[in-house]
Image (tube, helix red, strand yellow):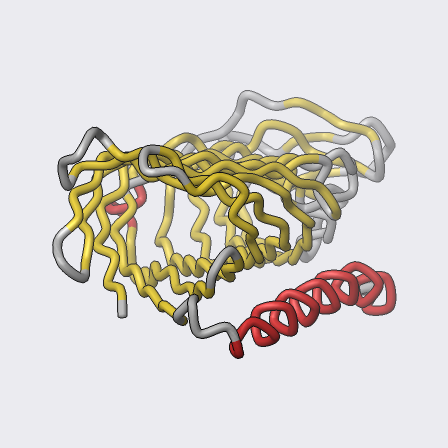
Length: 283
């Protein structure tokens, strides 16, 4: 059963923070020396996805639940749908940025590593072709304040929250049934199970850019770290970009990771890492 009240305790501080940031930004509207600016950034990400999932529900007719290793894989080969978008607003030193990633992936190469028989783990090497389909989204939203505004280096300190929702559907296939440590405990050689989980984490970090001389070339960068429902979540991004009159184009690399410290968590580990190509439109 989902624990909505504890979830709200974690969501509320994030909501209050965002409200305070919006009020702070709005309060600057009377300062005509600083104009409002907006940006929208569609992008394409080519990550490999690595995850470890620990199902907490018992499949029908089974005495145990599986622990699944989803091997690093090129998500483009299994992609059914993707939406990747960043949007932001700035006025003076203050800014607010939100990033949204939605992925729907068909079956990926996976393996059953352990069977959980009520807390007793039984490892297995009998996997014979397990597949996992995943869909979910990650959204990160953060307010920022510029602390360095030089001609070469610009840096914002940022703080906000990251939300992850993931659903995984596993069709497992073993070469034999797995017997549990107790009498009559059995995990069938074939079956299916679906489970989902959502997690909230607070984050802090930096965002900015480094100009390469007096040219149109520059290096955008971003890094954050946080915790909450996960023991640790972190993200790094850097790119080589070129600025046109009202838009930029960038090619870079991005890594995003979630790590749990709770044995009862469904998502034990989830990471996305790979090159990214995007365009930033400013108005």
